[in-house]
Amino acid sequence: MWKSAANTPDLQNIRVQTLQPAWLKNGVGLDVLRLDLIHPYVSGNKFFKLKFYLEEAKRRGHDTVATYGGAYSNHIAATACACSIQGLKSIGIIRGERPRLLSHTLQEAISHGMQLYFMARDAYRLKQLPSELTDSVYLVPEGGYGIPGMNGAAGIMEYTPSLETYTHIVVATGTGTTLAGITSAAASGQALIGISVLKGNYDLRHATERLLPEAGTYADFSILHDFHFGGYAKSNGSLLNFMRETWYDLGLPTDFVYTAKALFSIKALMAGNQFAQGSRILFIHTGGLQGNKSLPAGTLPF
Ligand SMILES: *Cc1c(COP(=O)(O)O)cnc(C)c1O
Image 1 (cartoon, helix red, strand yellow):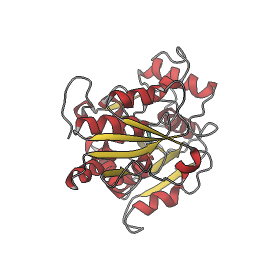
Image 2 (cartoon, protein in one colour; image 1 turned 90 degrees about the vertical axis):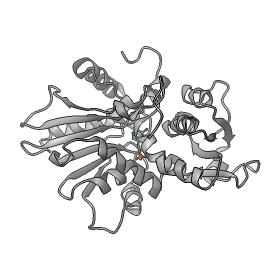
Image 3 (spheres, protein in one colour; image 1 turned 120 degrees about the vertical axis):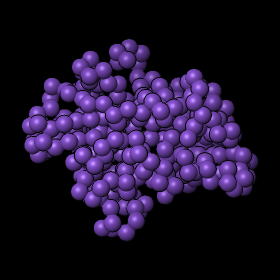
Image 4 (cartoon, protein in one colour; image 1 turned 60 degrees about the vertical axis):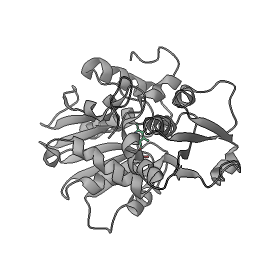
């Protein structure tokens, strides 16, 4: 899908690995789909979500793509990177005033040629396009939320050999786009579990269902709201310790905004005997490691 070159995202790097953390029990198997291996900083699932949007932009003859996000948004970083690979210009509309010091995420976006517009929070909420942006720009919704995003995310499952052997598939969830895509590609007997990383985002089930075809035609999915650790991009000592432990014991890097919370939920559900004897779990590592750069230096050993 993408050209392969040094430091360019490469889907050939995706692997399924078996994890054997000490907290596994009851004969349960745990595999991880490593979308984080696509690129060291630019998030895994975001490339899948962007695929059909960027194809559509080109088909309609646009040379510039614009999208929305916060200063730490994986979606902004990924859009900048994917557009530069596809020969498209990109514009990031960033929530809030321009800070004195740009975040690593925004610096990364600029390094891929993205032009940034900072928008006051009220205007941002209304998604009013700056007047200097004309009709010539192709707009990708915030977070890639939408049917093209879901269809792109469904492609994630093509990278899972023996997909049908898993009883449970677990993924960190923000907008629900990736969860919807995975759900649409899963078999009807599989249990999909989305771990909401926002606090009290009870609209998430509806937002996910809105993307999916008619009810009853896709696998069962559930959303858990108890693993946000205080809210979006919040963390605490127990989450950071879990991330260190996961790195030392399994060699698996996670990010504190999404993937660490999802993997932690599997550990907690395991402790509560929520997985039947012999279950086989697939944890989708959606990437996002660039987000860890916003932690104080030295917080994590990776
Ligand atoms: C954006 C993101 C998600 C959430 O994806 P949605 O499709 O918005 O639910 C999960 N994990 C990582 C690492 C992300 O960057």
